[in-house]
Amino acid sequence: MIDWVTCELPFVHQPLESGLVCKLAADGEVEWATRCRVQVPGSHESSIQVRSLDGDGAGHATRLHFSGNPSKFLQGHNVFGSDDLVTLMYDTFLVLCRALGLSPSLQEVRAVKRGDYPLSMVDINQSYELPTRQDVLAWIRAAEFKSRTRHGRPQMKGGTLYWGKTSQRWALKVYSKGEEIEASKHQLPDDLLSTPIPAWADNKLRLELRIKKKQLTKHDITIARDMTADRARELFSEYVRKLEMNEQVALSSEEQLALPQKLRSTYILWRSGEDLRHTLPKATYYRHRNELLPYGIDIAISRDVVDRSNVVPLIRVLEATPAGIPEWAFQQRLVHRSAAL
Image (cartoon, rainbow, N blue to C red):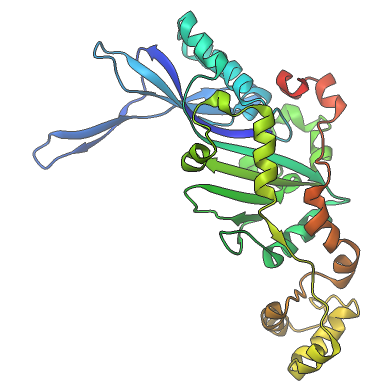
């Protein structure tokens, strides 16, 4: 689904009353001034921010800068949604204009409907279903130590794992969708808590791709209509394939004997299925974990998880059919109409 979008909508309008951020020179002269963002309320307590850009010399702004989540703005959530960026943004634009009391021309409306406006960043995501939330968390723990991209090893922040977090071109991240919608910052609106959405999200692994302007240009995507639903899905698959995943390593007898005695005993206990968090002293556990990681062994992932599901989650989950939008979401109108197209 399409998540976050940053773009500039062609629209001549009276500049939004939002205040200015200015830089003053020592003599008090204004060196530059930038309009602040206006927050516009959307569906189910969600909101989005826009600001006016440029001018036509007659006191009008000529572009509307948009940076936000159209799916969440229209649906009230982003647990699942549409891959159709142009339709999402068109409906969002109409809601924004009504909320702000703006009257775009027919030509401007048609330009937005066609997707004829610059696109500078887009997030595309997909959810994958695992047996339980614990399996989702085990996948993330395993990927932290057993995956990489051209950016190198991933970084964990909070419960989210990032590949290329500070890249100026593209990045990936993965997290538990069930955990995210329980966090205060991303909590579902009250009127959606009684829907089947929380139960559906509970065992979902969410993988998200962010593509920035330089990388979009590399793919010949400069305006919104270049990012069709099919193109969004193709790009997502292309970048997911850049993830290099390895399964846990079982040491040969020779390698096992070469381990320091203190690590050999810990390794044998781990291979037998012991949960070492409850067996070793805390300091010893973390020290041995760090010393075994270079051998491809993470004692934080219990052996039963490794044998039963690690190969499948790390390699096959991202090659399997992603979790589709449930039928009840359409019946209860919990997803944007374009998701059915």
